[in-house]
Structures are given as C-alpha cells and as structure tokens.
Image (cartoon, rainbow, N blue to C red):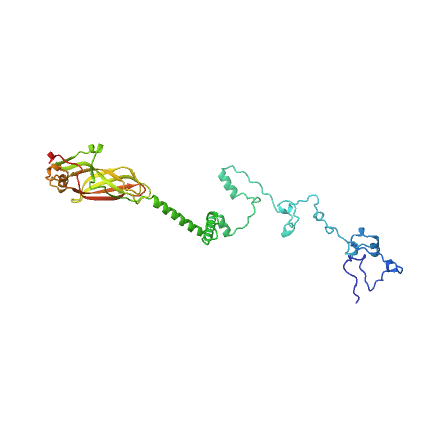
Length: 397
C-alpha cells in the first residue's frame, strides 16, 4: 500500500506546495551551484521571507520567486465555498419578507414563526379579543359584583409571577425578622467585645480591659470628691460651766419671765452656749436649721424648746453658737419636783444664808438639718449643776 507522502499542512517556509521527495522529480540546481571555480558565492539575506515586498531579488530567486507568507492556494481545496447563511434565507422561507414582526413570537397577535412547543401549528390565532361587557345601569357595588360574577375577565395585563422566596427570606422581610437580625448583630458585637476583639461605640481602644481601668479611675475620683464634699455630723458640747445665758433684745421681751404657785408653772427666755466641733469636715459646714428640746432628767419631762436658723460654720474649728430657748412648764401643784427644783435654782440669792443658789440639771437635744445630707441628725449634751440664767426678786419668794 502506497502512503500519501505529501504533507497535509501548508508549507509556511517553502515553495508553493509540499512535494514528495521520493516520487517527484528533483528541481534543477540553482544558478548558484554552477558558479565557476574561484568565484564568490552570492550572500543570502537573513531577513524573514514572510515580507515578500521587502526581500531582495536574490532571496526571491533562491525560493523560485515564491513568498513564504500566507497563500490560500497552498491549502488543499475544501470544496465550493458557501455564503455566510449557508445558501438559505429565513426571511424568504417565511413567506413574509415585507411584514416581518420581531415581536410576533412574544405576544398574542400576529403570525407565529416559532414552532417550539406547538406554538405555530394552530391555524387560528391563539388570542381572541373578548367582547366588551354590556353596560348595566346599576349602582357601583352591584355593577362590580355583576362584572366579577358574570362577565369574563381578561387576564392579558396580569403581570408575571415574581421570583419565589423561601421561608427564611420572607421572614427577613418582616419587622420581627429585621428585629431578630439586629439582635443577632448586637449579640455578635457583644461577644466580640467580651473577647477583646473590638471596642465600644465604634472605637478600637475602648476594650474590656480599658473599661475596667476606666471604671476604677472613675470610682477613685468619685470617692475622693465625696470624701471632700460630704459633710460630717459635728459633735456638740456646752461652752463653759454656765451653759445658760440670760436672753437679750427682742427675744427677751417676747417671752414673759414668771414663776407661779397657783397654778404652778414657770416660763423665762434664755440662750444656750453650744460649742460645735467641725474638725472632721474639709469644707465649711452649713446648717439649714436647728431644733432644740430641753428635758429635766430627774422627772423626764420636757421643760423647754428652741429654734436656730441657717448658719455656716468654718471647718477644722470649734465655733460657738447661742441657741435661743423658751423654758415653759406647767405643774399640777407647787410641790411638783420639777417645778420645785427650777424654782429653788432661780430664787433670789438673798434668800440663802450663804448667798449661793443651788444648780439645776438638764439635757439639751439638737435636731440638725445639715446641707448635703439626705436626712436630719441629732446630737445631745447634758449638764448636772447649771446656774439659772434669771434671778427672781425677794418678794416673789
């Protein structure tokens, strides 16, 4: 069997066509091989033979005056060349070259060029116009009911169904679904902040560790401020061995001074010298008001009241204030121990042989309303033998 020795591929670097080196007659030698002895061989150019128009005459002579560029005749004949459409025209075959409608296959009117799914096999048109409904002289409600129940409904303008959503996607479109998504995002941010990956309020530095130091610093600052600004309850005591002082001014004239046997009672004004201890306060101490009560310890009866208005006292000191007191007591008779004790302490000293009046004991309780404290506080002081601040006349005995 003789094989075709010719190459099936076009010769790019060669002559017009491929040759068979065994069967074809060899070409005559070129003129370059018959040069006389001693003659110089002509120099072949090193340029590519692809550009035939740029080659020298010598190069073309060596290649038998043929170019190595693209040549359609170097390929085997593939048969008759067909036109671009394969020799047929769809528009002419359709039979309507002048009335071509590009929308015919996509609406319900016009010819059907496509035969897919049996669309163009019916002779009658697929769409038939419905006759207009007969107008009915009735109310709007009756006409709408009649049209919907009797007249045919034209569904040409009904839009196509949209994309189908699954249950999870429909859940995300609702208000509760969006709320769950936000809650999940907050929960994820909280977990990330708790792990130290992000900071609070959109910052990177406000981490959990920073928050601990921040709260500790704020607590320390608040403790220092409170230690300075919060007032302390002061201590009170009587200023000297004579804690009661005779009243003067308008307060003295506003309260009558008298001791009566029938009915047995007494009343007189006086000032109580109170020393206040403010050494524990850092800033000045302010009293909104001070209420005073005087009690007789032996019989446990209240024998006087007092009131002191707003005052500010310096810190780290022992200021003295005088609280006005109104001594007033009513006894069942002149033998009452309380009445007798205060009457003997306030009698005229001339009635005693040695001229010395006996002292009297009492306790004073102060209810203080201090600015800066949420409630009132109380403090008390007691004396055993205090001199009476008044002295009765000899005739009153």
